[in-house]
Length: 235
Image 1 (cartoon, helix red, strand yellow):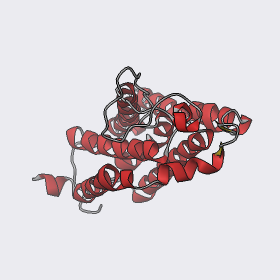
Image 2 (image 1 turned 180 degrees about the vertical axis):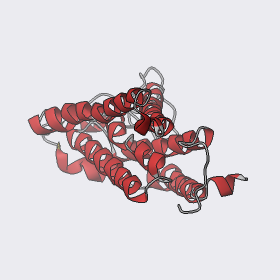
Image 3 (image 1 turned 180 degrees about the horizontal axis):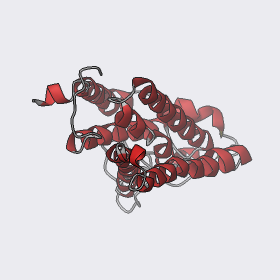
């Protein structure tokens, strides 16, 4: 059985990754969308993002949702542990473990990339009252400057990690899988946009987060699929 027969939906998902990757790498940097989309939240007279410390954004949308995104992982871990005792859950142990590991790999990949990133957060840029220089997507860090470590967006990764449910459930139940897809996109985008409003990230930072997690989960699916026998003709 070849790869196409085992994973009939993968070519479309890889096509999405390639097309969106080319767009983000070559076309998006030529636009001014990053600056245009955060301009409404910046006060040029006071040189600050006036929503940076706003209670709802900082306490609920940032810290609150960050804590909330831990809940699905804890529930999955509890279900995986219970699968060793309860036969009804045992049949889904591999799938539960796959989704749990997928979420972990998604978050870890963003954390690693951020640690090597030269790009600074908007609120640290000289254009917005900070002292860091803005560099192009593929540009080098100015001599003497410290890495900004702000790209891709870490906060949005907590929401986009829920896309693991989409990949992990697609061969089992499409409705559940699409619910996972919707949850990942909604939570990830909401968390990312809240950080844009505070001046913590550009849209491109969050889009790269989404793209990276999509690719990581695709690779994870190919390396160790959520079920052993992939008879997916119904997908």
